[in-house]
Amino acid sequence: MRLPLLALLARGPAHGYELKQDLEQTLGSAYPQPNVGQIYVTLGRLEKQGLIEGEDVEQSSRPNKKVYHLTDAGREALRAWFEEPEDEPRVRDEFFMKLALAPQTGLADQIALINRQRRQYLNTMRQLSKLAGAEDRDNRIAHLLIEGAMLHLQADLDWLERCQEELEELE
Image (tube, rainbow, N blue to C red; front, side, top):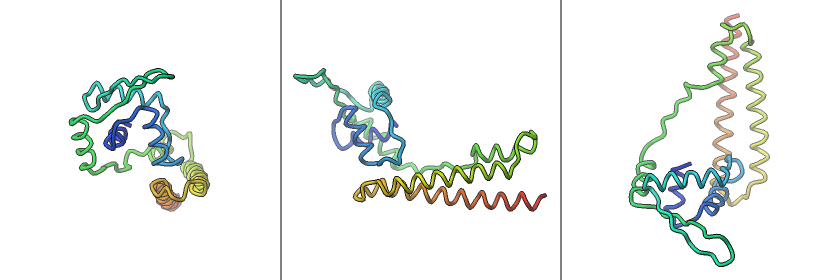
């Protein structure tokens, strides 16, 4: 959450609730939305790290609000984030760990595990399809997020099929 908040603050100063709204508007409903409390806790940490600075702004009919802006150190951290490619291979996959260890425990059948996981992926794909239909057509970022998730799920389904074929050959 820290670097996406820095990215939003690169556009200009904002308070926590504005940042939450910006995230929701940019990413759409398919992306898990943080609660405003999580955002304010993260902003506090970023401020302590010197990546942002906050300034209290008086409001006449409401409590004061704190508006945050990016510091030079925050801008540099953001540049470094954008420069660094993501390297998250899925070799530490929780499902695969279950699949690999199930025969040793005698508590779960591998094919049953695959079938359960397949149903989960298909249900998630249906939910994403509904979200895609409900999402604002002009929000290309949200649609790309949904499309990416659907493509990952399809690859996961193909991989489950491959696992099942391999395991059935071993029987």
